[in-house]
Length: 167
Image (cartoon, rainbow, N blue to C red):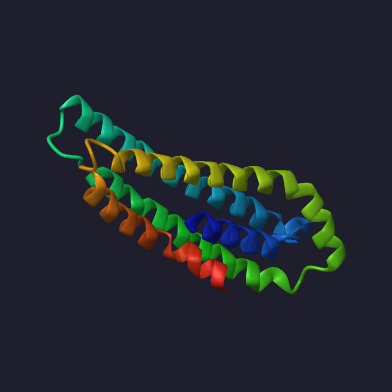
């Protein structure tokens, strides 16, 4: 379900940016790609923290599945979403000054970069989902409560992205 929200959010946002071309608008699409990469990086950080916690628990370094670091990492994802919202405001301000020809030309030029950034974001989100499933299965479900709390924080951190999808 959350993957659909992310996909919808990114597609809506990217469709708004198509055509932000021309010399003065080219930076907006590059900023979008940068923000997608930043969001993907933050999702990767959360996944890595989950994997580290599982390893520590399974090796006996930690008496319980401690996802505190993963929970802290969700703040970075939330910040990336807020920056995405700021970027959207900038796009909306510039949108009216772009003609259809420029829009089509720039869409063709940046399509591959946008698709690659989006694919990376979706792939990292899927990797996080798998890491959370693995954490839930640790020691006959000992990680379920901790993972449940982390999932709540992830949903909260994804809030800015969901707000973009609804607009």
